[in-house]
Image (cartoon, rainbow, N blue to C red; front, side, top):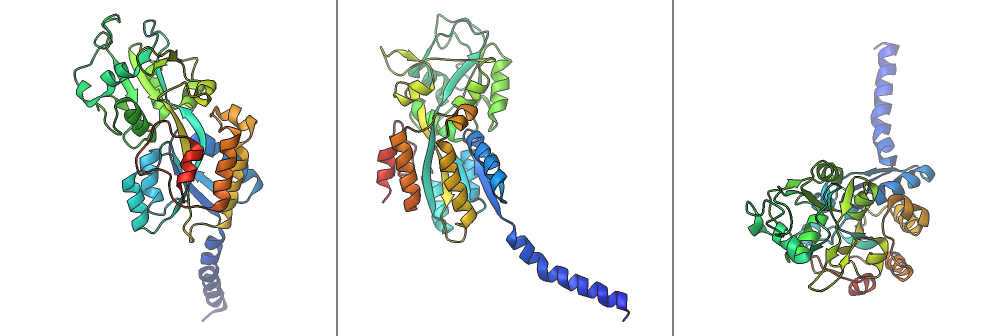
Length: 332
């Protein structure tokens, strides 16, 4: 055997020997889930990667799509715009995956219309239910059918897809049952698609997270919501969410952390420590346009994280009007 052949064999052996070690040394945190939570987590991930040699991949597949990956152990962190559902809890249990539930912000599900819409001054929960309930499919096609004072122009609907936590929360709050909705509307897990659709159609109506409205308020108009008969119409805003007047479309946002021993690595813990620290930054809140937790709730979430308590404060179903401190106290 020639020297060259022997040299090549040695090189091949070294590559075989050390390549697995090199791959094992790579530090990667995989995150997926909600498009509503994505801007917050992405900004935190970008800042974290500036100070740590850790790659943080943040993707969007909707809350439901993200939980499917999370409960298979494919991701370490899950962005969620609603709590984990019973079927997802069962999937995680079957896979032996524990998780820590962390509320990280509030959101106002925002109902929007086209900028040229000059007739909708507010919408009641009853009117929204009339529009979005399953029985409306193929029947409620014009604005006049919703309110006789409005023009007889086509009603075009835009909203999140069935894998979205925003879809789950909106249908629970408006129709009265999660995932109960007409399906003849333009659906997308990408909120920017919904923004573009409403902005291009005078007869359009859509809904999505507050941050996407804030970012596009020059192109869209938010609709004040009337929670019940004789209640005032309330626009979504940071103040209205914090003082509890924007009902029933105020909600908490979450991240879930895979707390299974094999997945709970030092870089994941460091990332969550950094995440919660960054969440208290007024600069970040202004930049991403999320609604930060009040100081007492922020303290409670940090205490809960330091205790590393696995589990959920929900019973596998979305709730409307839940308080963060009450939620965390349920997790024993």
